[in-house]
Image 1: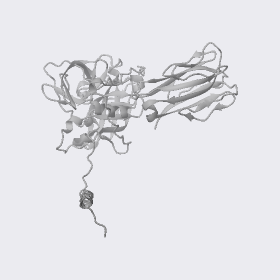
Image 2: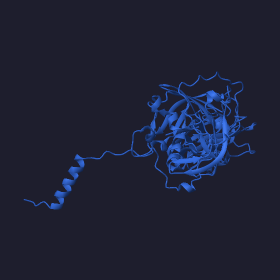
Image 3: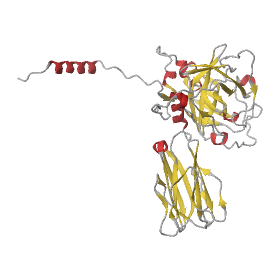
Length: 437
């Protein structure tokens, strides 16, 4: 009989014990929870970058175009009372006289329908279709849990809504905000939420940037107790007083209804989200590195714009999101093209090259540089477009071209050729889009 070593027996016993008394895996502190029926977001790996050196994401001003005559009916009074917050000494807030100016037009009045009634809140656009707000503006156990609908009015000014109304498509908050019964942490440190919209409102209004670097000079803009103050936007500049790992404290005056307002620096970058009052100081959830990474993931801010230089026309205006650049039915050649990515949250570039009459394939260009020629009457015959870096991991780039004698070709992607070579056929128009993987 073969002798079994005592060390082998000991190891076997340990394995059996581990199998019998398995320890449940604890959720990460920054797991993201979405409202039922919407897409779950997996928390991205945390960056090793120091919070004090992270410059963050810049603000984007948008086009600022205002919809003429877009008045709306008065919003019904809330059935859920606004929670009182703190006026610290003298009230130093002021009414914003022109809410269509940047960055004020990024500030949104939220009309929140919960299962148990209607409430108000504030938020700020941080991408073309994402509003940053407080966690209790999307999930509040006092009023039945998840909001069922949120109406979003950017730049609201009394009964006038210059940028119209957007509606919520889905909501997100942190697992630690949902789990209010835990004794392991203070759930109020995780009071942050996100609203995805049914339209890309931020292309018009612009949006605030994000940063983990704290600033002494800060501002807060929002809609205090809107039914009492006529849905007017108030704003104030102030000072950061203190900070902790997950919280910031400041001397900015607030009232019920301003929960969810971004606290932002002089560069219009968010450093936190207002949520609570403490009598002599108010506080918000800090845009620390973990929240920054989550916001970047949810906001997904990359916007692709492109334009083309057309025979007898010259440079056309910029288009995006599958807009047609060039012409069809006019027998005009494309001669050059620019592609540009604005305010992407991810590292990397969009790169592209053109096959040009009498030249052949040119070298790769990127982020706004011209591919093709102008003033030489040379037609574009083919294009290749690709993404690099983090962008290539998050998105596919799709494109198709309208070709002389052929019409629209099939969609190509990620470096494939659209158009023709060796056939002397001109490109006449192109469509391009980013598609999240």
